[in-house]
Length: 543
Image 1: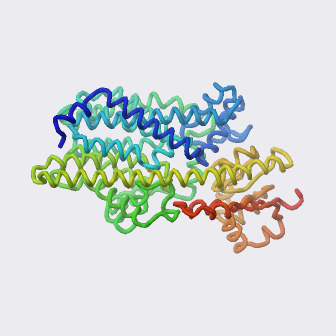
Image 2: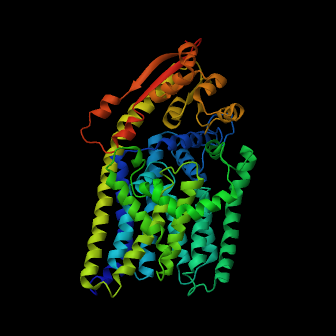
Image 3: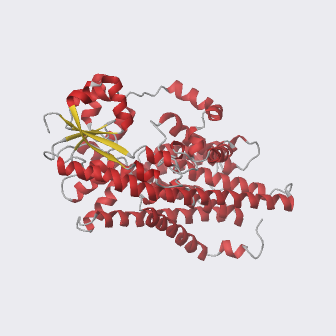
């Protein structure tokens, strides 16, 4: 597939620097153009800022509540903030963006090394790096304050080390520990990759039998546990539990039955044919299915994921590709069936695995003698087509996120937080809302958020009442302020209209709907419309 003239191009050492620089500049350019800062970043950064200013790793000063999931995602911004003398939130997010973009670029270099080490041609290698670098979710969540860039690096490092000629269990253990420090549910992806490699053993020429592979896993897992254990012990001591309160809040009321999990896993391949929710979103921009993106984009993503997720069922297929394909299925099953909701910042962990499988499939087809010259040319055209679609989606997503940041985040939610801070009776005022990040950070008030990510009071109320009804929770908690979307107001009025009519008074409406409608072309407009209007209520007696 690769000509003699092009072989030095892909084999040269300088290509690593070029890929690193290209992906890094793409990510930073995306950040500069969109200025996007994710809502959840400010949930985490409020704890980071409190740590940097000497108030402890807490969301609300004086309350030890574990309101974040990523240890590195909260500690690195805290360290950056302290390094700048706590003088600039803007410098902090930009420094974190640069660091995350470097992790993302390093992950791309590792993927290139995987491709070169396994004999991929230039088309398959280009598809691998291009699909990875042009995935809108991966790029956005690597620059908007989330931990995705680090997650991609440690996942790519895990694959690179496992596929090395002489896999080093201690280095693999470091990679696994890095994953756990990045996001605690990483053990799911570690297990998915490990099971895929055990099932098809693509490392038998380098490691040997499955018994030897299991021994390598045991050593790596032991080291990963030793490196990650200090955080678990510290969190347990500091918060009273090693489990983040966000996980408890999101998973309240759900339970896992082992038999049901096994049955769901067996039926999962068939289930994706009828309920391809996650597959439809895998290669699309964040929350694209909630917006009004063209329907064909979901079909495009679904087809790619079907191919990658079930390649392991193809008899006689490449063992390396089948191992990673099985890892894709197990990872998507976790997000689709076991996680409370497949939030878009979780999807890149599945997408990177699927991207490697896609490149593997292309490479295997390209070297098939049955295809001939025209067949290989067709594969090249297909790769170019897929990369073109990815580029178009990412550019469109960048425009959407630029408008979202300008009108929704900065123009609306940040303004609500600042207004509440100015009009609150004291810093002890309580605010009931769902949209916790911007409003919580810029108000610095006590948040009673639903489902209770930063509020044990809300979680306790949900337990006591055995209900998710907003009206009942408000009656129970009696917050000083309510910040509600019109749809939430309607739900409360239908449930118990007296709550808003007798207990609270409407004091302010924040509405940017006219500005959102003013854009003639806006992909994903429906997603922005969800947060274009908020109504602020104040408890009677506080006016």
